[in-house]
Image (cartoon, rainbow, N blue to C red; front, side, top):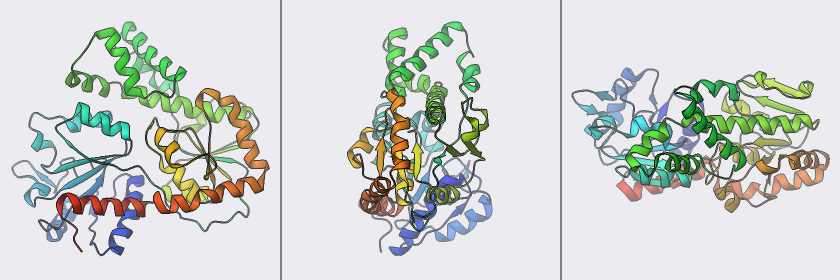
Length: 395
């Protein structure tokens, strides 16, 4: 596994590593900040037929120093190590990593991609069929705090960053007015119909404007429109928070950029800087209501939802196909619709006022999430996957 990369991914890896160790599997953390020395130690750990790499978002797969040598290729290939990459974002963010004139030079030979959304898995199979999709494995949660209902805050908690729509204007206008109109049409469509994925909306608009294009052409086009994904998720984050504040409901956010949100009742808006995952979980352990806006995962889940339930808060979130299947209304979760935000304040107010109901909701989903949606659960699923595929990590 990898460490000292992205803090959130480090946290996920550490959570799973505890389970791997409990199961009798040795874990080595490759240090991305000290790659050369770490790679020397890594070579003494690797055993062909016994070792696998489990990583997130291509960490350890980007030709890092010590891991990759131009004349020798990847260390993983030299020891015939299977590499399982959990991609926590849409594949179109990683187009540059998934294409190559010489594929083996950019990614190891035994590369497997794991998707956190079933739509992502479908997209990978269609647009990058040269890679093997290993599994759908949604994000998960961790219980960090002792669950107590004493002194929980009446402020609605949201742990996420925010970028203003204005930030994306240079991307919308980067070519000419005709392209800007085209991009705005996709954005307007997604705002009006937020149940759609970015890819299905963009592909429909592209086909209407350009005619039928090959998948090879379209995967590059989609990569150049990832700013639309970022625009739309930040647009809705802002709208959801503004709706609550306008209704007089206090909101506490932990994340970058929120001081730029234009909103009513700013006195009710408590803004804290971006922090680490453990602090966010501690804040969920002190909140009655934890807000979530899905990052355009329409058939997956976000760790904020499971973190909230495991740490005693009720998760208030828009839905996805997968979430709707896994957690029914009232199982530690309350769903709202992005197309009916006027109903959100009443939903939240009801949770804050009716303490007995809120506590009951918080308890109802706990056992199910503990059994099915922790990083311990994901680690055991990965152990089964690797053993079935490669026979590695044998006890």
